[in-house]
Every structure is written in C-alpha cells, then in structure tokens.
Image (cartoon, rainbow, N blue to C red; front, side, top):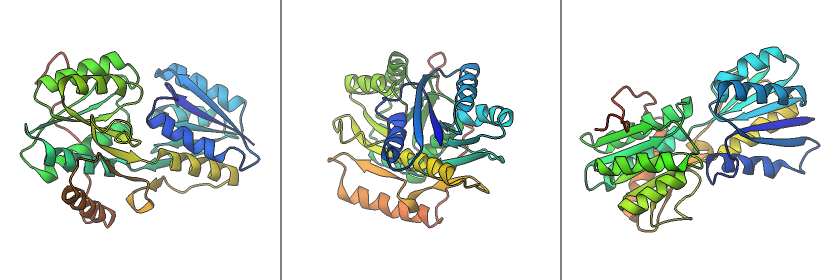
Length: 304
C-alpha cells in the first residue's frame, strides 16, 4: 500500500510539522506500506488542493497534516472515491475521510494558567499564524485557562498570517512586548525563530507548543504546551493500513498522554503541582476548556 503524507510548509520546522514527521518515521520499516512524505506545500488553497489531488492519483491513501486539510480534503476525496484520506488535526468525516484530533487545546489551557500565574505586568499574549480550526481552538483555550487563573488578566492575541515567516513573527512579538506582554504563548512553525529572537531581545518569556522547547532554550521558554501530533499521525496511518472506517473524529487527549505541559527548570514545584491538579480535573471533565473566542484581536495596524 502506498500512503502519501502531506505537509504545508517546511517539515523540518522544529515544531508541529517535525513532531508529526516523527510519527511517520517510527512506522517506516514496521509494515509493508510505502510511506511518501510530501512537504513544502504553500499555504494556498489552490496549491494545497493540487498537491492533494496529485498525491491521490499516485497513492492508495493520503494523510493531510494540519487543520488546513479540513477545507481542502472534502472536494478531493469526493473526486477520488476509491482512495482513503485522513486529516490529522481534522474535524471532518465522510465515507473515505477520517479525522484525528490531538486536543492541544487542553495543554493550551494549562499554558494559560501558567502564564497568568507568572505574569508580573498582568498582560500576557498569544501569537499564531494561520486561522485554522486547531489554532483558533488553541487560542481560545489559552485565554480560557488564563482567565480561570486570574479573571482580571489582560490578554493580547493575534494571528500574524504565517506559520513560517520569521521576520513577520518577530515584528508581531516585538509589538506585543511593547504593549506590556511579559509571557507570550506561540503556536507557530518555522516562524517561531523570529518570535524567539524578539523574546530574547525584549526580555519576555515564551511558552511554546507541540514539542518541548524548554529542553532547547530554557532561558527564553518558560514552558511548552505539548501536543503529540505524532500519535495522531501513527493512528491515521495504522487505521488506513488496516482499512478501518471511523464513525467519528478520533480524539487523543490528556488521558492518552497525548498532551501536557513541559517546564523550564526555574518553574516552581508548587506551581507545577497546582497545574497537575488542574490537568487531572480537565481529564475527568470537571473543568471545561472553552474553545470559542469572540473578544478583540491585536494587529500591527491597530495595536492596543
């Protein structure tokens, strides 16, 4: 069986895409499937659709990595009814489409709690790139967690329009620092390099996502909202190989050890324990994670 795995943007981004790629790599050699990675696809609907269609022509199944696939996959899957499709971080379902959703909003909520607890200015920030469903849910959850910890916290949030352009992310992060943000939660891919440069220059701390950024740069990163996207990728490929038809979106969460929070060494044990208790309550559905946000957004054109 030939399965193609599609990535929007650079696959070696040090974050979301690279975490997803590790799931593909773990499966290489463990089955008779031929796994083909297709990356560098531009964030453009026509080009994403073209890449997905081309992959479907040459594959038995196609796995689209990222919420961008929610908009692109249905039309292509309809055009290729004899092919299997999957979207990792998806929320769509059809006879030949399966979706897998690592609930990164749960770790984003915990990141919001942490940021609110640590902030000295009373102003924290969120910065993401593309306005896709997982990113929107993650932003809302971060805000929800911050307000759970401190209802008076001020949150500056925005989408800079790119996951991979470091210069743009740096400009946005610097602008947020100018607004008084001292902890910035980022949901970016290669563009995180620019945000990190801005954090280092302005002295603010960052909370990363997807992978453990604290292990790489604990001076800048206070924490990282882990999301085991690789587990979603593994599930998608294995189910495709076994010919499984899902009746609904398959979700992976705190109970599956698919999400969580990693910390820099300077984060106190008492705060870690407090957040661990909150995580347990989320897993037990005693705390609801809000995934809708309707308040104002920050932009470089209209800051404030």
